[in-house]
Length: 96
Image (cartoon, rainbow, N blue to C red; front, side, top):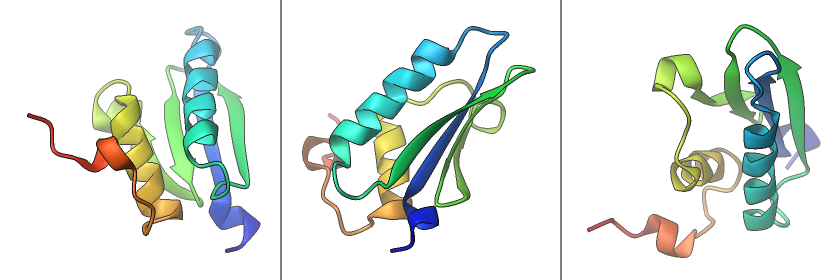
């Protein structure tokens, strides 16, 4: 898999103070996808932006998806893009 396909970019609003949230998501992704990801980049932005892209494709957008992702849902979406064969264990089990 090419490096670009293994890259996750988290664009966060500096005006809103969302750096710590973005860093926490990055840490969670790096801890879960220890060998599947080549990079998780934190990209400063403005205007209320909070967007996650994996392999150049959108995975989550605060405006389009309604707020911030649950970390389990974010991991599923990133997995589906960069490592679809990967089992996420408890995160793949239905809630109930």
